[in-house]
Structure formats: structure tokens, C-alpha cells
Figure 1 (tube, rainbow, N blue to C red):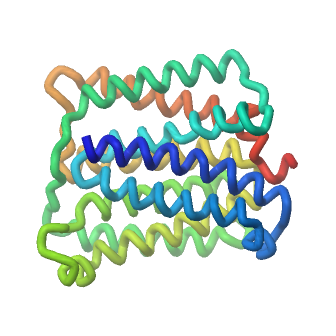
Figure 2 (cartoon, one colour; figure 1 turned 120 degrees about the horizontal axis):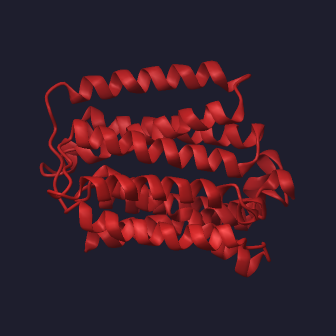
Amino acid sequence: MLAWGAALLGAVGYGVASVLQGVGSSRATGPAVLRQPVYVAGLACDGLAWLASLVALRDLPLFVVQTVLAGSVIVTVVLARVFLGARLRAWDAAAIVVMVAALTALALAFPAQSAVTPSGLTGWTLLALLVVGLATAASYGRGGSLLLAVLAGAAFSGAAVAARAVDLTSGLGSLVGQPLTWAVLAYGVVGTMAYARSLERGPVGPATAVLWSVESVLAGLVGMLVLGDAVRQGWGVVAAAAVVATVLGCVVLATGPGQHAVDPSAA
């Protein structure tokens, strides 16, 4: 229950952060945005949501945590409707219902379980970090918004994988000494830079949809293939359908008026 509560808290935090940062970015540009209290509050919500996701990753499979976090677009759309007067389409309402049902099915399909850490995982995780980091650096200057969003999704997937594999049983000293701990932070920095650059190059809706789609599917697959995340017997089709439904719902909501209401480029 603690893990599920943390995952839901993370989704709410990310959703609130999107609205606050969107409002703050519409009032200032560049470094000046950091002088906007509402924008700083959004960054704080992002940080709390990230910490909550790390708690959730200790006991819940990656597919579950990442898909629940993708549900943050529901929070963004609802808040934009209530506080910013954004229009809610019939498609948006249907997407919200479908996503809630899909997340419920996902909760039933994946039981709580601890991750396994196979030999060689640290090396492969660091190698992937190097590849994603170099690709982000190469694309930062002229890369398109969607390419940067894909790289951000890959980076945040890496952070989730590393966080789930970190050993928390040996105390703080051991935690600081683990390469995977630092990989989580490094992936987070790369993902944040790539996503911020993506938003500079294009609207928030498509970038957010691509980010959450890549992050949910990529991290989930690594969790099942490498970290031992397992679906309940006989629930494979249900789990796959739930993930697809959530990603599609995320795309619908991320490209709707609810996201454009907090899009600085549309302000």
C-alpha cells in the first residue's frame, strides 16, 4: 500500500508541476522564470514526485510505476480545466475513463515484488547512460523536439531501472558507494536537460506524449526481461492491453486543449 500510495502521489505531483511550471513560464522566459514563485513551486512538486516514484519502485514493477506516473496527464488536464478554463473534449473524458480502468487492471495484473539484480546490470546501465548522454549532447544543438523527447524518455527509463536495482538493505554508506545510485542522478540530469530542450523546440503536448510513451514501455520491458518483474499467471493479455490503453490515453490527453492551456508557447 505504501508503494501504491507513493506511485499515485508521484502522478499527482508531476501533474501539478506541469500546470505550475506552465503558468510560470508564461509569465517570464529564460533564467528569469526562476524568479517566478509559481514556477519554483512546480520544480518542488517535480522533486517530491520523483522521490515518491523512487519509493514506489522498491516494491512495484517498472511497468506499474511508469504507467501510473504517465497518468499524471490526467491530473494536468483536470487542473487545467478547473483553474485555467481549458476546454475538455469528449475524447479527453473518454481517455480519462479508459486510463483509470487500465491502471486498475494493471494493479491487478502485477503483484508487488522485489527486483532482482543480475550480474552485469551495473555495467550495461552505465554503458546505456553513456550512449544516451552522448546522443543528447549531439542532439542538443539542432535536434528536433520529438527526438529530444525520445531521449528524455530513454534517460528517465534508465533512471527508473537503476533506482529499482539499487540495494537499499546495507545502509546509507553502501548506498552512496553504489554506481547505480549515481547513475540514477546522472540519468535524471540528462533526462531533465533533454526534456527542457524538447519544450524549447516544440509544443508541450506531443513532447509529453512521446516522453511518457517511451518511458512507460521501455522501462517496463527492461523490468520484465532483466529485473524479474512478472505478471500474474493468466493476466498477460490484460496487462498488455492495459499498458497500450494507458499510452494511447496519454497521447490523447497530452495533445488536447488541457495541455495547450499550460503550454508556454501557446500563451
